[in-house]
Image 1 (tube, rainbow, N blue to C red):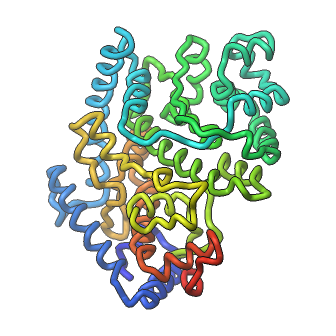
Image 2 (cartoon, rainbow, N blue to C red; image 1 turned 90 degrees about the horizontal axis):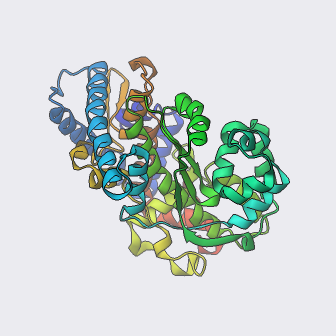
Length: 415
C-alpha cells in the first residue's frame, strides 16, 4: 500500500493498509494501489506544469493559491458563456441562471429517472402546509399555493423557509409510499425567477455560496436565483454541483427501481431523500455506496448481468457522466480540469485537491489553506481505487452476493 493513498485519503490506519493487503492477496497481487498512485502523481505533475509551477519545489500552499487563481479566471469566462447562452436562446437580459439551466437541459446526457409523481408529492404537501414558504411567496391560502407553484418548487421553498422539522415530517411520510407513487420521466431542472423567489433565495445563496437544491426522490434539481452581486466563484461552484447532482439523481433513481419489489420500499425512499444508499458490505474501510456500482457498470458495460438486474434495471439506466468533460463542452477554455476529479498532490503530508468542485467551493467560500476542502477529491480517489479492485472476479462476486445472494460464488473477502 502506498503512503500517497493513505495520506491523500487521510485514511484510518492500520485498517486501510490491511484492507489493501487483503484485496491484493485475494486477487493475485495486481498492484492496483501502486498503479493508481503512479498514475495520479504523473497526471498531477502535468497539471502543475500547465499552471506554470515547478513540480519539484512547489509547496502545498503555493499550489492551493494557484488553483484559486485558476478558478477565479475560469469563473469569469464561464459566467460570460452562460450569459451569452441565455441572451441567445432565452431572453435579451442574459440571466446567468437561465443560461445555466439551458446548458444543463441541452447537455448530451441521459436524463431519464424514476421519481415520485407530482400528484403524490402534492398530497403530502397538502397534509403538511408550509406556512412560512406560503407567506414568503405571497400566497394567502394553501389552495392558491398548490395551484400556482409546482410541488417541486414548493418543496424547495419550504426547505429554505421552514424549520428543519417540517422536512423531517415530509421524509417521515415517505415511508408510506409505494412503487405506484413513482413514474419514469425526465429529470426536472427548474429555475424559478420571480422577485419573490429572488428574495427567498438570497439567504440560502449567501450562506452556501451556490444556488443548487437537489431532490433525488422527486428527480428534480432547482436552480435558485443568484443575487445581482453574486459571490465570486458562485457560478462555477453552482454549475459543477448541478452536474454532480445529475449523476446523483440518476444513481438514486436506479437504486429505487432496483428496490421497488422490497416490502420496505418506503424506507428506501427515505434513505434516498436524506443520504446516499449503501450496500451492506465493506470495502477499504468504508461502506460501499450504490453510486460506485452505478459507475462500475457505466464504465464496464460488458460485465452487466441481465439476470441480476432485469426487468427493473437495464444497462442504459446505469449511466454516469464525467463532470469535467461535460463542463468543457459548455465552456472549452476549462479543459485544464479534464481528468482531474481524483487528482491531488501531497506535499509534507498536506494533500491539495485538483478536483474542480473542491477548488470552486474553496474559492467562493474564501477558505484559507488550513481550512481547504478535500471532500470531492478524496471521494473520487477512493472510488477510483475501489473500481480497480471491483474489476477482479472475487471482489465483484462478493458485491453481487449482497445484491442477490444466489450469485455469490466466493466468500465475502472484502469485509
